[in-house]
Picture 1 (tube, one colour):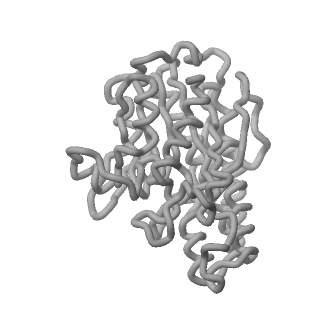
Picture 2: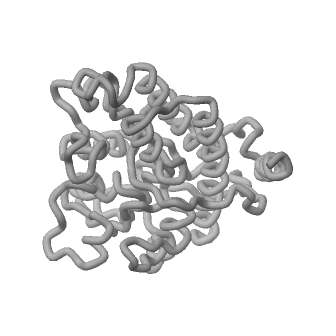
Length: 318
């Protein structure tokens, strides 16, 4: 076990994920904290990945906000939050749309409407960075082609939005653990820390691949954080989750978003977009998350998807 941990730490140092973030070459987006949800598989991506080289950003041609007008080529990647899990299905949905839980109320369609364009909606429930974004995903026994190659199938898009990382960090597993048994122990925090280190490597690889595929003219890449779905235990069975566990979950949400955001300064074409559901958590009067008995518990409602879209559009100056 000790040898594994030392090997893991060595890999983290080589990949640059334990060191502090580099300075962004363009203006940094304002930040915020929030969090997510999703089912995750039994096996995760390996923490002993090969080191990742980050590109120099000084010579790149970056699409400025005023260069993204109506009719922009827009691709949406991500997991069940971006897919719109639990909301009405797409009209004329394909088998893959159904397997991936894609909805017409998902935030990418609201963004596309404001930009007066269409969206290539590739997000899929259960997607991780390495198993879904740049690697093959298997869901319900069906192989889903990696989202990133499809995003560039017809050339470099103008905009890519991505909500991904929660499945890599096993965020829904932690919520389920808190609700069914107990959570927040030292071993849980240690596991979460290892997963966060891994997701930094995977997101760095993703952005590296976007840069490589763009041949020096990358798209605007907006990488979102996640919302905190629970703020109190008022509407939850008192013996199911405690206030201390809610506090631990929210702290892990903050840390997860920090991990996602920490990769962004390495790439001048990328931005972090915070998603804030404050006042609209599960037990609030106007929740933006689906209830625990819903088809997709803790996932955004239609109103939540609209709020996420507005956060992205704000970053785009729209």
